[in-house]
Amino acid sequence: MNDRQKQIVKAAIPLFLTEGVSVSTARIANAAGVSNGTLFNAFPTKQDLIDAIYRSTKTAMFAAFPAPQGASFGPKLLRKNWDAYLGWARAAPEDHKVMHLLRESGLASAGVKAEINALAAPHGQILVDALEQGTIRGPSVGFISDLIFNQIDLVIEHNLHGTNEELAFDMLCHSIGLVK
Amino acid sequence: MNDRQKQIVKAAIPLFLTEGVSVSTARIANAAGVSNGTLFNAFPTKQDLIDAIYRSTKTAMFAAFPAPQGASFGPKLLRKNWDAYLGWARAAPEDHKVMHLLRESGLASAGVKAEINALAAPHGQILVDALEQGTIRGPSVGFISDLIFNQIDLVIEHNLHGTNEELAFDMLCHSIGLVK
DNA sequence: ATATAGTTAGAGTGATCAGTCAGTCAAGAC
DNA sequence: GTCTTGACTGACTGATCACTCTAACTATAT
Image (tube, rainbow over all chains, first blue to last red; front, side, top):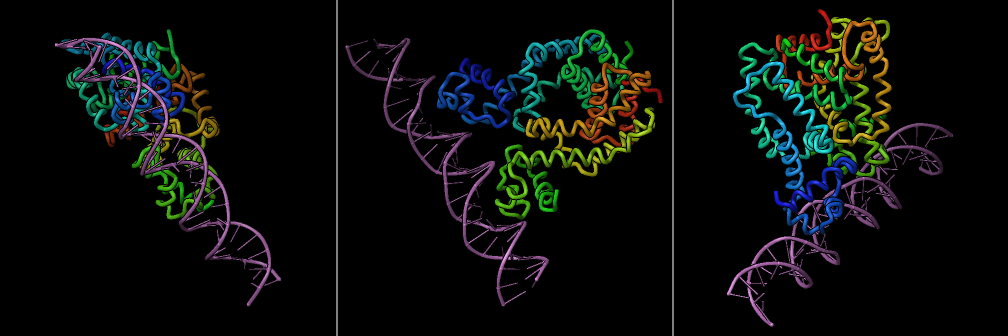
């Protein structure tokens, strides 16, 4: 992404949140301070812009995680990843919200979703090992992974801090059978 | 809702899922086998139609739950409600999906969301009591309630059955500190 | 058979949309 | 100084949108 594209993406994110999924390209171009034509010079179609927003937020999210190589799963690593995701989502709340909006509204294309899934794979491998070794329990790695993200999203949504956040983390540990 | 309205709502649900959030009223009217004008005779605005779909699915969902009066919380009641929600979602998968789509895409109006929240209140009261009495644990009733629904949604999304579904239920019990 | 009331069909309306394109402009190359 | 390049602009376009309007239709009462 070049500067122009970043500028447009940055302006588009709050618009999607405040104006809804059907915000027009004209409004986005206006908010970014560029002309209609420039928007379509940066992104050939509206779908390309939407996918760029999704890719940009997801990539930033994964960048916040500690490197998955060589680490062994346990309460400490889970906590590290918990803090990483929670920290990113609270530092960039609009990015976090729009990431969910674009996925759950079906606006993000299947292609970009598949592309992003590949980024998640190395982090998932840690869970695969932990589940095989009996460190954690659950019906599948995908289920456990979704469970963890859901729990943290709930902490954000309910704005939990301090002991309440600790409790939510403890509940997650108990859920997946992880002894602290 | 009269028969006409039900007919249009029924036709609209699969369209929202297959064509996306921006499906046109013309397509919906066509799928319902009525004219454009008849759709707007049944629902004055597209928003009214969307809200009717949301209200209809949510109401059907709550109707599936056992009556909340007089029941005391415990693993058996949790399981009853688990089965009720899971059963409804699996019997009416499109209703379940569109309910989430309309909420998370921001298409359902704030008004209808507030209206539906009132339906949830009596069921929530059971959790309020259980949390006060220490039967379950969690940072708040809203958090626990969301947690339960999220867990069941995951069971549906990952298509869990038999022992895997049991495991997911057991994980939920451990999470909220409910002894079986 | 006729009157009345309510409903429906579908062409029509103005607004708005994503996307286009001819022309402008500023900055380097020589 | 002039030429070339490439990004930018914004008016424009055809398509599509939510919604309207009226003539035709249906059902019931008398």
